[in-house]
Amino acid sequence: MENGTYFYFMLFENLGNIRYAFFSLGFILYCAITLFNAIVMLVIYLERTLHQPMYILISCLSINSIFGTAGFFPRTLTDLLSDTHSISREACVLQSYVIFTYAANENTILMLMAFDRFVAICKPLQYHNIFTPRFLTVLIFIILTYPMISLGISAILTSRLTLCGKNLFKVYCHNFEMVKLSCANTAVNNIMGFFILITTVIIPLSLILYSYVKILIICRRSSSQVKGKAYQTCIPHIVILLNFSIAIISEVTLSRLVTLQLPMWLSVLLSLEFLVIPPILNPLVYALNLPDIRKTIIRLMNGSR
Image (cartoon, rainbow, N blue to C red):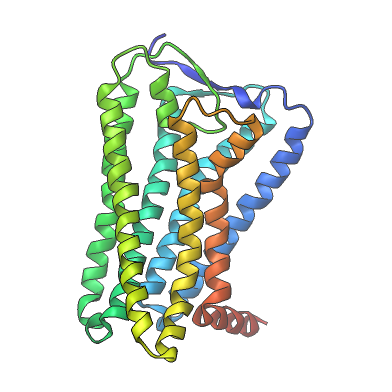
C-alpha cells in the first residue's frame, strides 16, 4: 500500500439507525464539555482572587479538555452521520497526535497539581517563595511542551512507515494501531512509544504517588483544622487522578494486549473513557467541591441577573 492512502473506521459500519442516537448523545456531551470547561476558565480569569497556582492549573486542565475533545468529537460525529468512514493518512496522524498530546498533557498537569499541593501542605511557609508566577510559568511551559515535541516525533515516525493495511478497529485514529498496520520494521516506533509511556505516564504517576504519601504523613501529624483544609483541596484532585489513571490504564491495556478478548462494545467504551469522562468530570468536581470557585460562579450568575 502506498503512503498516500486512506484509513477506514470499521466500527462505524452497519450501525443502522442507532447511529443517530449515538450522534445525539455525542453532540450533547461535546456541548456540555465545552460549556462547563469554558465556565471554569472564565470564572478563574475574571476573579482576581483565583489567580493562584492551584486555580491556574485547574484552568489548564479545562483548556486541555477543550483541546483534546476538539480532536475527537467533531470527526467522530461527522462519521456517525456519514455513509463513508474514510480518513486520509495525514488527517489520521494529526488526530492521533492531538488526542494523545491531550492525554499526556492531562497526566503532566495532574503531576504539577500534586506538586503544588505537596508544597502547600508540607512546606506552607515556603510556598509563595517556591511557587512564584515565573516558576509556575516555566513549569507549565515545560510540561506542555515536552509531550508536544515527543509525540510530534512519534507522529513523524508513523507517517514515514510503509503500510500494508487500511482498516482501523477504533472510532478514532490511534498511533499504535497505525503502526501495527505497517509491513516495515517498527522497532524505532515501539521504542519511542515505550519511552513516551514512561515519561508521560509512569514517571508522573510515580511522582504523584510520592507527593500524596508525603501529604498523608504530614496530615497524620497535623491538627484537625489543617487536615480538613488539606482534604478539601486534595480530594477533588484524587478523584480526577483516579478516574484518569484507570482510563489511561484501560486504553493502554486494550492497545497493547492483543490477546485480551472483550466484547466489542466494552472495548469501545473503555477506549473512549479517557476522552469523554475526565473532560466533563473535571469542571464538575472542581466547581462543586472547591468553595472559592463555587461561590464565584454563584456570584457571577446572580450579578448577571
